[in-house]
Structures are given as C-alpha cells and as structure tokens.
Image (cartoon, rainbow, N blue to C red; front, top):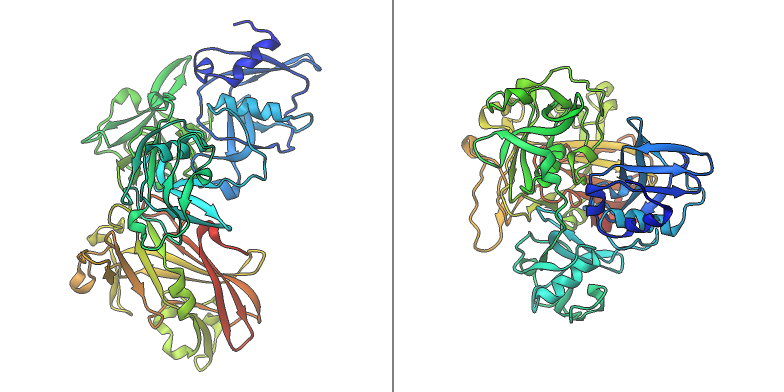
Length: 554
C-alpha cells in the first residue's frame, strides 16, 4: 500500500487498520540507539507490520514488530500502563532515541494500541482493577491519600461501572458485579453508595458517601468491561487435552515461508508463562504449568519447537510479548513429550498476609545454638551459624504471620501427597519447598539478613463465620487454605524468624513474600509482599508502618 505522510493520521484511529494494512510514515529522525524513551500507554496489542522511514538519512528501516516493555515497578500490572517503547529490527529488539520525540508521537503509539490518548508520565492513576481472570475485569480499587482501597457495592450499577471502564480505556461496561464476585480486597473501603450519571471522566467525580461504616470486603464492587476483539486467540491453541481448558501449547509461526503450528520449549516453563497463555485464549487463570505433555497427544505435524527461551512477567497480553529467543530456537530437551503445556481455570486463590498481626507480635529472642539444631538443618539460620560455637547464642527476630485466602478457590500445594518430603527432625511433611521468604533490607533495598519458611503444614487455623475448615495437617491430612480461612504461623515455632545476629543497629525494611516462586497460581501476586519500617538499637526492635503490596510508604 502506498501512502503519504498525511496517511499517518490513521494511526490515531481504528486498530483494525493495522490488522489488515501497512502504513508508511515519514518521521524526521529515527535512531536505534540505547537511549531509553520512557512513554505512557495502555496496551491492547495489535499484530502488525510497520515501516518507519528516516527522511533525513534516506534510509528505510523495516520494523517487524513493536512492543512496550514494562518497567520493573509496573511489571505485574494489567494492562501494562507504562514502559519503554521497543521495535524489532533484524530479529532484535531495539529502543528508540528520545531526540525530537513529542507528545504527538506518544499519542500515535497509544492510538495504535486501541486507546484514544496518552497521559503525563507523572500522573498517578486513581482507579485500578484487581483479581480478574480476563483483561478488562476485576475488583475496583481507588487511590486515596497514597493508599489503595475498595468500593462498597451499595447502589453499584452499570453507570458507575461504565465510568470505571472508560477511565481505564476499555470503553463501556458489560457488567457491574457486587458481593465481592471477583475476590475480596484488603485495607480500607474508600467509597460507599456511589452514584454516577455515566458521563464522568473518573469514578472520583461521582457522588459517593465517604462513610463506609458497615461495609466489609464481602461487599467489594467489581466490573467487567467491553474489550475490543484483537484476535489474540487465533495464533495460539491448546492441543490434546481432555477439555478445552488444558493441553499442549501450540503457536502459529512462520516456517519455510508459510504459517504452521508448532510447540513451545518447556525449559524453565512455569506459572507466569501459563498465566499469559490462559489469558490470551480467554480461559482465565492458569492452574498448572506442565514441562512434559506426553500424555496429551497433539498433532504430530505440530511437534517442531517454534518458540524457546520464553520468560514472562505475567502482565503480557500474548505469549509473543514475553521475552523469547525469536528465530534462534534453543531447546535442549527438544519438543514432542517435553513440549510446554497448561491447564486453565476461571477461579484462583489469592493469599494476603495480615500486616497488623506481624506488627503487633514482633520481638527479639536470644537462643542458644544447642537448641537450634533442627532449624540449622533446615537452613533457617544465617551462614555464620555454621561456624558458631555450640554454646553461643543467636539473636532471632520473631513474629507471627496470619495468611488469608481472599480469592475464589482454595490454595492447594502443587505437589501431591506422595511427593511430600518427611523431615525427621521436626516430624512433619513439607508440601512446598518454600512457602514464604523473610528478609531484612537496608533502606536502599539491599538484603542484609534473610530467612525462609518451608510450608510444612498448610491448614485452616480459623475461618470466617459460616465457613467450614477443610484442611488439617494431622494424620497426614490434606493441606491447603480454604477460601475465607487463614493459616496462622505462631511466633514460637521453628523458622518463624530472621536471624539478625550479625546485624548492626540502624533503620531497616522488613519484608515478607508469600509464594515467592509462584509455585501456585493466584489471581493477584501484587498483594503477596508486605513491607514494614524497622528500627533496631542493638537491644530492642520496633516494627511500624507495615503495608501490603504497592501501598508501602518508604
């Protein structure tokens, strides 16, 4: 297709233009250098080929693909709202020099991804969605005084939901959900009895009652938005499964000049990659990621590995947005029985730590080495303990943790009963290799002390009213955490600590991460991290300002 510079206006309009045509645009200067261009965008990715021409140099650079790579702080947000603009040239991803880059250029990029405009880099979004299985759905959360909170479902209706969807760039609302249908939030309830006309630019412009007295998280409001059909599912499929929600992952890729189906190398294939596959196909969350799929007999014509080295942050809309080897396939295992597979589900658990319990139960204990033999065998002490005198003492930062399941399905360890490991020293089974990480960080984020808690016993310690306990560790029972229940690890059990024997007095950040290796899929990983400010004077310790996820104030 031939076009003039005037045709570039098309970039601001329908995404379908890029799905079916190619536009040639003349820009003054385009350099592929290492200078990073930091732009803001809301992403709904289109499959396209774009040619950029450098008039000043008289060169034509063919761009095979383009993407927005999320920044570190934004890597778990869906959709990706800000990042570095990258284009693929000659099979390699390259960044664009910011020389002569303008706001209009950013507007073009946002238009290409299906959204009408861009925001300033420092503008903090006031509304977000959490816990949804699909793009454009989730529990509504609003930002107030630097802290995210939920919306009570009193008077919640389609008009208010449409304001939320439009504010997030999704267009109109499909459904207004009540009764914490997409999971319960944490923290404060910021808005109650919301009343919108439907024409407001932001939910915060609607009338609402600031008094949320009587509203619990069982009444958290949620939305499902109308999202443009981008055709993502046409380049990916699951093959050989017992139902449409499971199977070997197969992608449509160019092979010898034609498009053909092939498999994905399973090296380091995990939950994050499976999450992206399930989302791309509109099948919800991942329940398992498989590195062997010999029991799913896919088509033999698709056995060839066409994608390898896949690394996903979990926020990507399609598998090819993840980091991967491109055309240079490297797969030691080969395809066939070792191809990647997934199983998907419409619901998922969501673990959240009770920050208040941690803050209220923290204390120091000096304990002799002879009483820490079992803990040392399980690597619950710092490395200096290996050479410590048996009569010496270790200083332990102890605390209780109370872990709630606020999701829509039970949290179960990935490993089955038969593979649990018996620990003779403590006389119990470990169902997960590592369930939590406990770290003490300097104020600049450097790790100065660490601990870990193997999940030797996942059970329902207590439950909300009306919910029955389902999991109990006694007698080699089933392990897990039921929706609406919580598992309490008391401060007085082994390994429920950080060894701070070698730490100097000062100010620190205390951090707890639940399910750190993403062994079990959850609907929201952003609330798996808790951070507290901590002050240690050499004899006493103070823990304060404990916050979950992105609400932490340093």
